Length: 228
Ligand SMILES: *[C@@H]1O[C@H](CO)[C@@H](O)[C@H](O)[C@H]1NC(C)=O
Ligand SMILES: *[C@@H]1O[C@H](CO)[C@@H](O)[C@H](O)[C@H]1NC(C)=O
Ligand SMILES: *[C@@H]1O[C@H](CO)[C@@H](O)[C@H](O)[C@H]1NC(C)=O
Ligand SMILES: *[C@@H]1O[C@H](CO)[C@@H](O)[C@H](O)[C@H]1NC(C)=O
Image 1: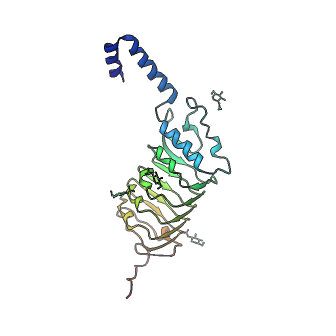
Image 2: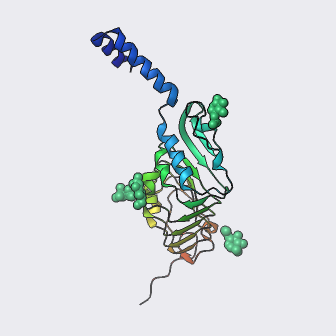
Image 3: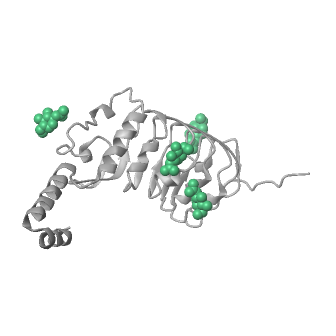
């Protein structure tokens, strides 16, 4: 920025250089840190979820320059003065709706906790394009249905993945074994069946697979070969 301003200073004279610097200062002042994406991300999340208990009602976007989104309930930023969001924790707030696609705007997100709400529908099959850098994803105790998307295996930073107590069906994608950083994994209390993945660096207890329609392998009894 300074380099560009200096070139403008020498090229077009002090006046236009001054204007450039002034414009830059005004921009920095009104957007804090240029993390407008993260503000838009929260706006989109808020507008896509029903909030019968009014928790997100406290997210007030009218004071862009002064009220930091970092002070919003459930939001944790990397630094207090810089709007980049580190974690979103909206557990047990009675939130209803589909998985919030608008989260794609929160580019610096490392943790998402939407547990104990009424999130419905499928886990998006492009989930790694939406929250590709999260180390922790907790969607437990919701109303999610459909299959666990293979694309979750592309969220390669995951340490913690909790999908327990939903209505998920089908097989657990064996590709999840690619998640080499995974330490905690639970899909208990769903309607899953078939072989469970093997994880290189995690010791997943049988409890993590409890109360499903028929899982086998790993810490459970071995899968029987299909007869015939
Ligand atoms: C915006 O911020 C100003 C100064 O901090 C405050 O007086 C005002 O009530 C705020 N407006 C809203 C809508 O929150
Ligand atoms: C996940 O990664 C695989 C391998 O790189 C790629 O083929 C696939 O398209 C990815 N899925 C998505 C939804 O990006
Ligand atoms: C993810 O998939 C949804 C539904 O198919 C689509 O609307 C959205 O644009 C996709 N987002 C990205 C970032 O690929
Ligand atoms: C499995 O279901 C039983 C009966 O509903 C419940 O008591 C138990 O806590 C469940 N197990 C797990 C690991 O959630």
